Length: 350
Image (cartoon, rainbow, N blue to C red; front, side, top):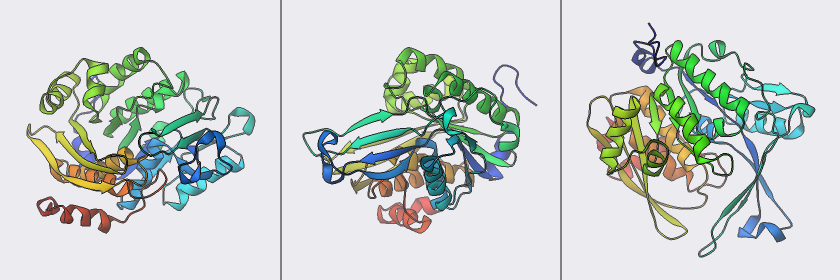
């Protein structure tokens, strides 16, 4: 039975507990990085990898042993095929990718200039008119794509890419609600893609339909006027926005090459769940939040009531992602579990 106001389906917890693959929806691009922390303006070489928030999460889920499918649009070009090949090589199901001719849209690119203190790292996008940005609403058969799924995952980057993709994001989420598939949403904001006002209008429409919300204190303050301590923000996110579970990550930077990671979550039980802090050396920051989302989702699908363990898996996955280059996590489930044990988090193993 579906609530007409929110689109939520009664008994949605059964879909979580039953597992099933995670369906991730969003754009992936080629990442071009000058080696040796060289400046983009004078490099003679570029390292090529693949990255994109939802695909990063799908790859990390596969590392953790969770079936994952990625839904997107790619051009029938060597670059489009490269992205699909990398996703497939990581074990991600790409059958939901919509393929279009080159004239219907290109492959998005982004350039990462890695730096050392005091020079900040910088990202330069070249993604206008990408294939997925040019999709028409109704491109995807969401009832078919979500059949048998345990969860739908989307980030705030996806609706930012274009008006058509914004509308398709809403269709995907509402379809998930109608068929009883829980939705996880990462409140990512990219100022280079849209304004705060545009993002706020979209987020205020979508977030009340979400089950698991990943958000920062800054994001909650900017887009929903929620402020206060971490605990106050988590409680307000649940009570004011109506999400089932609110999740926050925490970071303490240790210069340019070190970071301390933690996380908290609040669910229906009303008690704050917290993961132990994990210190890690930074090789590559990008994709860390996506790896956290994957770890949390993996734990949540296994036991929705044990948010402490979900936070622990997320924090450990994020820590390991920071130690490898590229956007994708490269680690086994055993290595993620070992981080929990090494940080004195044996209680999370239950």
